[in-house]
Image (cartoon, rainbow, N blue to C red; front, top):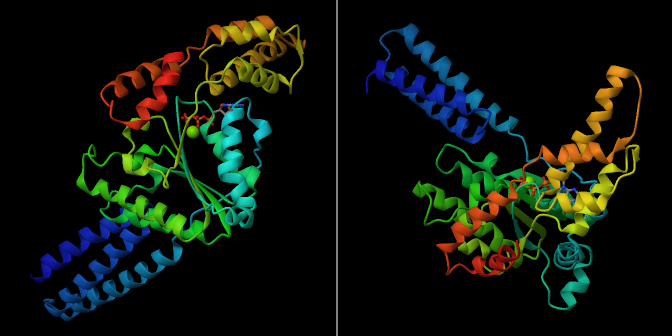
Length: 363
Ligand SMILES: Nc1ncnc2c1ncn2[C@@H]1O[C@H](COP(=O)(O)OP(=O)(O)OP(=O)(O)O)[C@@H](O)[C@H]1O
Ligand SMILES: [Mg+2]
């Protein structure tokens, strides 16, 4: 390669490094070092003393930039959750299962060890949007009182081959630094997609990396829980759902009548109300998700507030405000259930189908 070609190639690498600097510091570091090495080579065939000096100075600057990039790489953030099970309406069975399988082993590892039960592991929650999967994960961390790593699966994805696996490994490493922790993967299908269906072959490696990390949890008796949530369970690789990895696969359906009643009471508690007939509202909100019930209550509250701005007179939230809001909401779970039926029809050998069919038939 001649001087000009070295310089052009180095420039292109610097540009790629600059683009990757924020989203993928490791990749940026690699690009800067490669560019520096090319500039050092270029200096050997530089046409003048000035050009030689300039390319060596630039190479030096890029080495320094690469070092700085590594130093600035931020560790995965975790939070402590203040949400508790009492903040979640209904789902008593699911809460019970989480208490027994996840929280109790974290809290009493010695007792569980005596009974030959390992601590840690994972659950995969699935169901229509807005039905409380994220809320449950947060409440599990709140109840267990351990650090909570909330990760959008898509945020770990890098456009550079090999980087996503590194991001997954780094996240698990970070979580393992704590005596106990909960790792929550939202939109899990972005990482755990079925290896037979992935468009790009390198995406198969994401699942392999996840399998390696998940298998490691049990064997090292770490107090690490992995919770994953998805709206598209049929897209998750079967190997990830096998017992021992995401041993429990839990369906989170739209709230039943009891849960809807509890939810309405919880959500209206903080504001003045008059003559609310929650039984009628419960009937009208059949199939609504928790998020949709939250939305309708918020809209209803806005009606007297709007009036107040115009008239300066304040009145409580009335049944008619809630009835008006109910009409403005079209629940998305119907569409989700019809999609689920469609998807699962073509997957009769999928164990998930058997689990879900029961619930789908009841809807
Ligand atoms: N069981 C519940 N009790 C109280 N509030 C609930 C419940 N379920 C849902 N909500 C309300 O709905 C909102 C959305 O719930 P959440 O984000 O947990 O849904 P999700 O299942 O994770 O949805 P998505 O699949 O879209 O990520 C919550 O912030 C809460 O206000
Ligand atoms: Mg969610």
